[in-house]
Figure 1 (cartoon, rainbow, N blue to C red):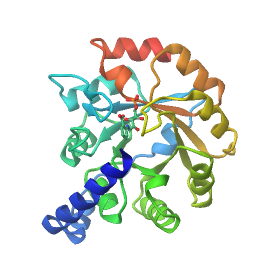
Figure 2 (cartoon, rainbow, N blue to C red; figure 1 turned 180 degrees about the horizontal axis):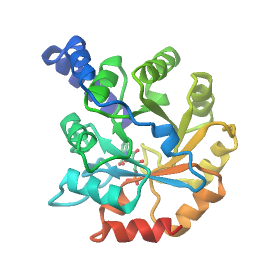
Figure 3 (cartoon, rainbow, N blue to C red; figure 1 turned 120 degrees about the vertical axis):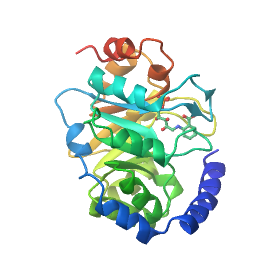
Length: 258
Ligand SMILES: O=C(O)c1ccccc1NCC(=O)[C@H](O)[C@H](O)COP(=O)(O)O
């Protein structure tokens, strides 16, 4: 699945670059608002929530009809989330950079916003910052080591944070070696779409205390949250289990209950 997405994104980025160049994005960045501190937002005493604005997923299809991305982001903000993740990908997740921009630029949204996409080039980092994003997701296994290092460094140079996503031991080692300051462990296997919290427990042991850690995917219940808290995670990235509820603020307070 990941290979198909990456191949699609490569073509998509090449064609976007023909319509809007990096120099044009740099001009837009000059007018963008200052980046908010995503890393700091996840560094509180209690486990933080990064809530995801996600209309569709390859594993589940459309998650909710009559979906208003901005209204959902406003509900998240009101419910007290620490940060908001917004899908920048249109084809597989029904997001877009315009949607990221509309949320990240809205005066009711004050928490950091992460541009969630399958990033493999600097172009996409410029696109994220030009959309007023404060952070990006970088997936270790779709990048070679030099590219991973360069993209982390470029993300920081643009004033954003990088959430560096891992799936196995080798990914965690590579993320640390590349200078990641925030490491995500994806609980979901993207080939089988199964979640495996035991693998997450194993990988968590490899990550030093000075790194901010994020547990990603397949978190549904208060018990799941308590489990991630017991492993020492700083934050969780949750989409589906919140989005699918009628009462989004109610679901957030049920699982976070501080
Ligand atoms: O969510 C998917 O089906 C998916 C499929 C292929 C690649 C990535 C995918 N998800 C990316 C994510 O990181 C999740 O959207 C995120 O962790 C939130 O997960 P969830 O709470 O399970 O919606």
